[in-house]
Image 1 (cartoon, rainbow, N blue to C red):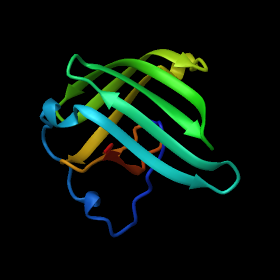
Image 2: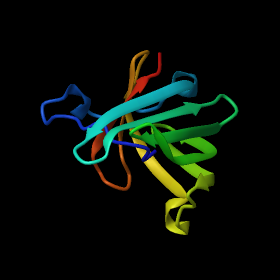
Image 3: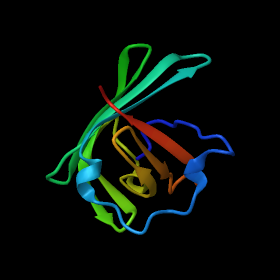
Length: 127
């Protein structure tokens, strides 16, 4: 789930021990994160996690779509595996599967530890 990073502070409560299992229903819906890149401008990621275990999304930079993707997801306890089946531009083979650790999820945000970068990231429910 590397669409974009919402960086957490060192004293963030999301640093607490991970939950044992996640109810997949809590993941369903649209998620987003917005960041300001010093050179490129606003970076916005918007994606959907669907009940049929599919996902799809886009990343825009300064209003232009730079990445669109879709695939399937699988949840095992608090580990979510992403299988990218479509990506424009194409992903390298090593990037077609990712595993992230979900730290918490509620009605407002999803906090996860990126398996590739080992940093906490936050996504927010799209309104």
